[in-house]
Length: 499
Ligand code: NAP
Ligand code: MG
Image 1: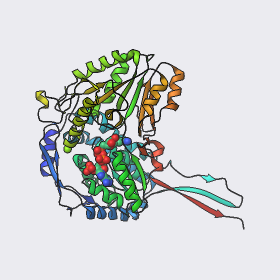
Image 2: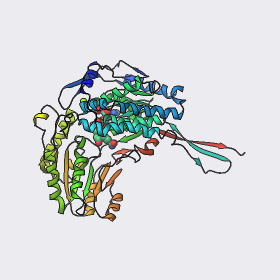
Image 3: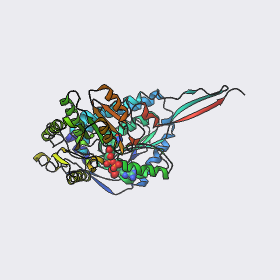
Image 4: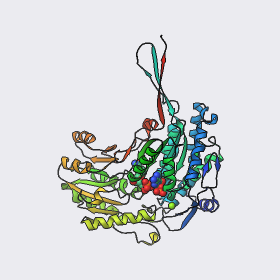
């Protein structure tokens, strides 16, 4: 792992004035509402920027529209487009330590999580989708004699890409790479708490002249900018990752403007079922613990409810608590730190409030339940890994997305009961189960209601496999060939060749 670039980051933050980028130039935003970004691990101010307002967003969308129709982008050969897409990945790789440093300063996750988990994938996804540039195409359809009918896959146009603060660079790259590979242009809007890595990426794309002007555009700001993007008639598609509530607002905005295409990656409340016959309990417990508490549990697919068969419940609960109590919160840049700071104050308060709700509802607090008071965590937004036992499915902590280091343990007696509890949620992003019974494994694959089902190994991801939820966890998929459906439209062409 490369060392963090803290001195470089300090210099860069001191002199950075880049906040709005469109049409191939850095612009002075018309919006003047200041947003102060805080380092959540220390409480110190990182930087302040003016949020883009609706006019700024509209200008960025107009630049993206004009670039979409420009010869400079449209007439690039496929090979050349693929090369440009790959170059973005290469520049991310080259600047990985800088970007990982900015990510950890802004988001609060450990530097190791940024550098090892987020950065390689942020770069590699560009290689993956560069490979699809000449491999995603239409078909010839078997229609009646005398007619030729074929389909073509065309880019949609201007894609508004709205991303949350938990994996700021990575989730943006998951969208930018396939959107550009298919020939679209993009306006990216990160969450205001975590804009730094995308500002830096825009700088690198600009300095290296990787893309024609207007193909990649960046607006900064919160709900107003996001809403302007989703309401804009110039925007043809929104790909959004964030909460289910905001996803609903975006659907309304799209409906009221131009019925733009939508891909929505929304909230989750993933259950993991642990049956008494499971193999290798120590490894299972370690995997569940890691899947839950890494990235300070601000992950949409993280296990939130562990459903444990009655006979192994005490042993499981005890082992998870033992790990939680030893877990060290603190400076994201210290090698000994295992859990960083929650990303922002409102969210931190929301998590602590859910912990209060859990206690009031009568769940049994097994560990954690408060902010971390160790010296290295004094001024930051650190919450001790928290585990509640004897959680009932009727409790709010079992039903609502907490998105922080709070794990609910629930007991079950039979497979039917476990499946019923697992599926009793508005969400359907991910679910998992551990059992040595092969028949049950296959049964659960069909019975669990989720877009991703992890059996005997929780939390698997690969560019070649679709990522996304069902129920109120989302519309459409990211990753693999499935993502490309979301960034193309299918045109059907008919030609009569016999009179
Ligand atoms: P959020 O509040 O929904 O915000 C997401 C983004 O939307 C932010 O950039 C936000 O700006 C913007 N926004 C807010 N109001 C908007 C509006 N009316 N129109 C358009 N954009 C708007 O979500 P978050 O709290 O940042 O992220 C946590 C959520 O993301 C969790 O629910 C989590 O499960 C979900 N998530 C899902 C996935 C997945 O793949 N399914 C992955 C990661 C996270 P502001 O920050 O200023 O509000
Ligand atoms: Mg921040």
